[in-house]
Image (cartoon, rainbow, N blue to C red; front, side, top):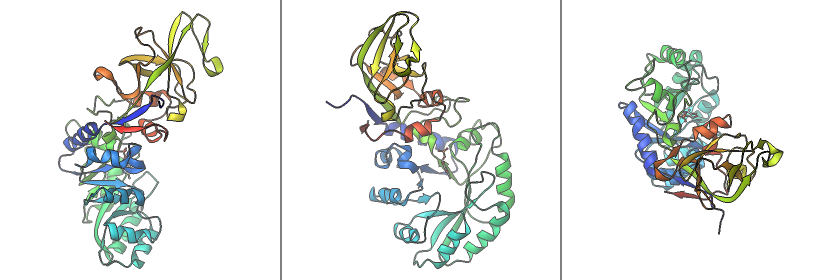
Length: 368
Ligand SMILES: Cc1ncc(COP(=O)(O)O)c(C=O)c1O
């Protein structure tokens, strides 16, 4: 019998979340961002739930090949473009659209032999200072691309650094618009936080429009601006559940401690459950005492340190729990209970993105 831990992927939640992106940006086409193996969900497993997207955006050419192997014939965008000249051959062969963010990528395109001209997304660095041409260099890059027979259509893109916070997007939108206003081509601006906070009904401020939005984390049911807003506020559902079972019980007396480092001391009699889940499964070791979990759908707290294969839970709220009781580390619990991945992530000082991407290989994953 394998350890009782497993992850579930919920295609209905993926489809529901994608529909939320559409509802907020009804005039835009939606890229489902599936980089990092669909944010840890697995491209093949996530595909059924996300196939209603207008296109898929990712980084890795091997992942693009996997999408084509699923018979996806629609648009695929390489968000960072190509990494070396010969990648362009695969772009031609698989009809991949690609970002162009630096002069070298234009040099490589200029030397590329292709019968089918490429669709490119010229990327502006409007303030993130990661990838892209500065506003001052953007028009010249556009003109270079526009002169190439290898290029068919040029779209314009930029990426927001602060769409999830009160700092917002206005400064980047202004920089982008000023440098592009008389350039033709479709625009792609918004990540999840911009879609949720700056588009559609009830946009918080600085509404933005975009021909193509790039919805990543929202598809997977995590709120990009947690804890300002939670997934329920944005009507998002968890696309991944991590669940396990209680495999041991201990009755603590006042003064007893739990786990490595004896970091938790009982101040009263306390019944605890030992759960088959640890940091080697991708559950953060940094989650302190008090991190929420669901036991048989009832909200409980962890106590003591997370170890490699186990963690420990205070069973006070659920006295009937015993060996075999179901423990939800994040996602959907029994009886309709939900524990958003953002809660354990925040307890560990990180974000839902990191937890879903860090699900360990040893955890069996099933499509629910
Ligand atoms: C260029 C680009 N667009 C869109 C996204 C999707 O972002 P999010 O998952 O916050 O929606 C990312 C992710 O980091 C990205 O790098």
